[in-house]
Length: 108
Image 1 (cartoon, helix red, strand yellow):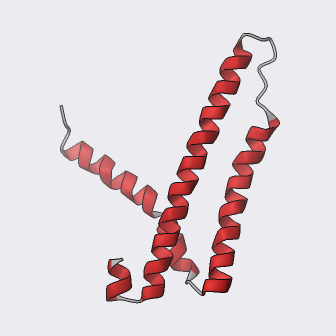
Image 2: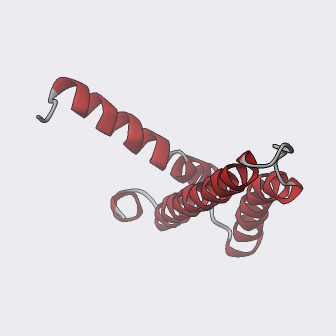
């Protein structure tokens, strides 16, 4: 929002869209890992410990869907791609910042 007010509104929108997509990607990743964990736990009792094929499909489809959303937003809404890519990095940057904060100020 600050970028939209201080620099350009389309960059602010791109950062917000990228951040929302990063959050959505994280949620899908968590759901996929939960399903994979349940499948492995259920198959532990069996001698066949294979991973379901749809788990691989969902993992790849997640990236395809995010790339498709970025393309459509860039093509039709004219939001700069670089701002959306930087927004996608926001979740990683926030994680690094919290980790560094916890290193220097550990809570007991």
